[in-house]
Length: 134
Image 1 (cartoon, helix red, strand yellow):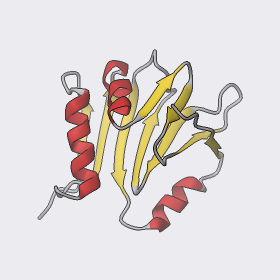
Image 2 (image 1 turned 45 degrees about the vertical axis):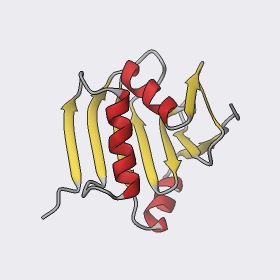
Image 3 (image 1 turned 180 degrees about the horizontal axis):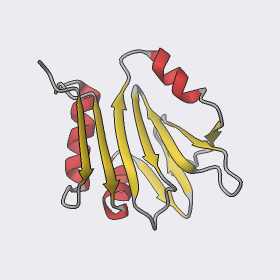
Image 4 (image 1 turned 30 degrees about the vertical axis):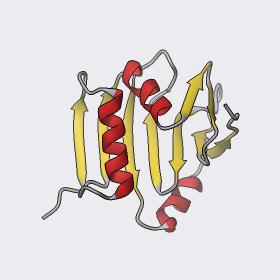
């Protein structure tokens, strides 16, 4: 039996590099894991992790030279609340109001087919966010 989902309540000591290794293992399917959920990920872990995978987040804007898609839920104040990053077949969700100043819940999920990714992209209230090149 393979453990496909790993849930952690809070991970104060995980490094961005360790998150990057997990991300690569999930993307390359080199481990049995297909889903990682961390209840509270600190901003000093999340922002550098995104940088390691080629995504920059500064002043409320995402930028990348990679072929990624970023979505957010419409909100009265800001469309980037709870951003979802689609990176190939990987969904990266930053749950709670995400900023370079706040902690967030964090989820990596590998979608085996295109159908679940399309469901994510077409959820009610979700809009695509423009990404600037770096």
